[in-house]
Image (cartoon, rainbow, N blue to C red; front, side, top):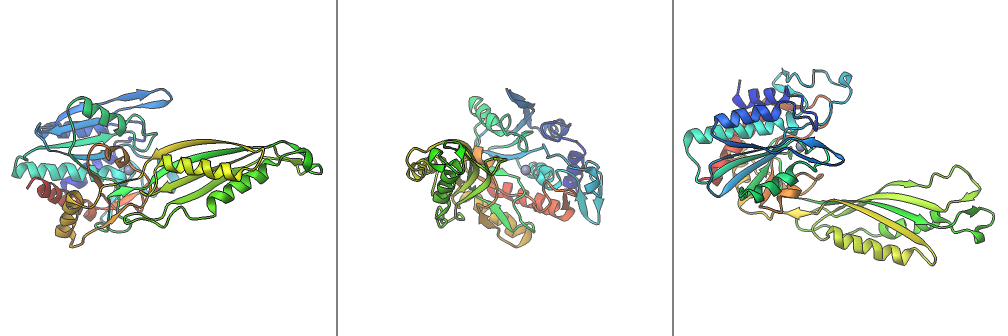
Length: 381
Ligand SMILES: [Zn+2]
């Protein structure tokens, strides 16, 4: 069996459902130490979140430090009956490896480790190679990559360039890499009026009516038309709640929740300012509103250049295809890494991630190993 496929199987057999370590980091650490990596386990904790174990491993001490970032934690399996295999048995059927984490993203870690093994058999890179592996990507992402990056800075372990092994290809390997991501913010809006009898509206102040005006004001126009590397920003209302069980009472309070996915034409700060201005203008005399905002991440872009060229050249060499440079999709830990060095994401096909019967073609793991090997050769030429 291909070394990267057998390592993928071994990792899938570690039941590392977030936040459990499940033996996955132990396994990686022992393999990497055998290859000459110096390993640091970085467990972090914070009130209100589960304790999480993480692994930073570095081969060499010189700069530049080429980093591969990923996670060994996986999402829960869901009902076992919805799987046609044991999610932690790592079964291969007709050239397809099944298991939780097969695409997101244990096989990508395995592919990178084997790519490094091959490189080191050929030469000693001028610089370092490191792996930043968290157990908190699928969880709250509080005790993982973010804190590891702070630790790196405090311990003189700066990274110079980073590839994240998340599944980036929509349908086939080599289709797409991510060079940035949209930002995301969740917003909770509460509008207050005054409760009253529906037959006597002059004695009340209908919060539902005011809420409708506010939501109308923010959805009437598109946020933008997109930018060079990004789709248009979107605002989606996810719930409107009044919870009024009666038909004859004017509600005194009404709530709505919405999410904004935004491109590089905005930041969470400019959008917050826009929301307040718009609501101030739309609320009307005597109305009151309250806004609570949680920012999941700002938008970012690593402009096309050295890193995207190296990955594209590697795909070209192995698959004869250059991937599209995209910024679509949800957030990833790249949102933390972008503050430290250029970062791009390239991994497996994401079609079955987080689903029952998560699976990856064995051939894709083999090709991804070749691609990562070509990326390393492209960087340490
Ligand atoms: Zn993932």
